[in-house]
Amino acid sequence: MDVNVTLLYAVLMTAEPREDAKRLAFDPIDAARAQWAHNGWAEAADGMAVITSLMRAHQIVLARVEATLRPLGVTFARYEVLMLLWFSSRGTLPMKVIASRLQVHPTSVTNAVDRLEDAGLVTRSTHPDDRRAVIVALTRGGRELAERATAALNAEVFERPDLTDADLRDLFEVLSRLRSTAGDF
Amino acid sequence: MDVNVTLLYAVLMTAEPREDAKRLAFDPIDAARAQWAHNGWAEAADGMAVITSLMRAHQIVLARVEATLRPLGVTFARYEVLMLLWFSSRGTLPMKVIASRLQVHPTSVTNAVDRLEDAGLVTRSTHPDDRRAVIVALTRGGRELAERATAALNAEVFERPDLTDADLRDLFEVLSRLRSTAGDF
DNA sequence: CCAAAATACTAGGACTTCCTATTAATGGAC
DNA sequence: GTCCATTAATAGGAAGTCCTAGTATTTTGG
Image (tube, rainbow over all chains, first blue to last red; front, side, top):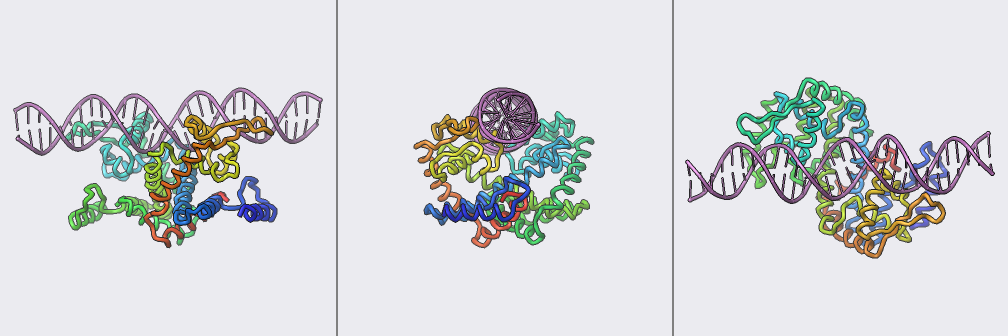
């Protein structure tokens, strides 16, 4: 197998030199899948390949999203909080609702809201009917930033996902089944 | 729209009570997609939904992987380094090769190798032909842990990805095209 | 041949995530 | 009506990612 891979590598590298010199000639995840199968883990090889692909795809997409948001001074985690508030009728939500909608740990919300508050994008106040609870409210600046960030993300990421419409639909549906099985909804 | 969503929510919640009380009655990502479309961002709605799904699927899968590895005292990031070394012919690789294979920043490799070294799972040494470079070598204990961790992951995660074979294949292929377009291989 | 550019790695910092433990407030059981 | 269990949020800590800068080599170009 090593011989074949090396040959393939050499052939592709010489056949069509790319502008990006670091480009690989084979898919490393496909190579890992083959390794898995040849080590007696054939039953797990496809699952490993899919999960590894998912990890890598996430890394790629997140990097693109963060690069788009960086000039606006906000991260994706904080953008998600802003949009949740933006969509709510009053522009306010309790901390625990934010955590449950975003499916993250309560302390992650505390962290994000701390930073949003420092940046003047949201304010905290005590819930009138339950003094344990904290209500987060979007400020004028937070609302404006949410809108600018959405415009940037739509233009630079969401409207060009580098996939065909059919792939887009398939991907959403398969991931939807995965999320559903995991108890997401 | 608020009315419809609320109605739907109420209907589903009363129609079929689940054992998990916190289960949602609708897919929040589908709801977000609808919100996007109704706000004049129809062109971006599908891309937003797919990317959000990808983020959430990643979160779900990573949590399962980390839960499986936790009893073994290793994280997924460090497991990836161990397996890269395990698959190499001599059980050794330079830092920069690890970074390029895993597609992570060099400092992430430094971080992971620091911890693996502290745990006695790998050793560092200077490359004989290039004293800038550092060679990472798997120890006996590192090799054993890699094998135990793989057995655990295969049994508890990779062999039961909660998807049909067809979905598994589709998902891999769509993600493969996404990664390829992003310049992964 | 030697100065300048490139490369390999590490240090420190920002940010996210989760975990465990703590504080404050609510609500139920007796 | 009080005492206790539950709930909401936060504090501190571990671990991951990336970024920018720095150090130490190696390579390259005049």
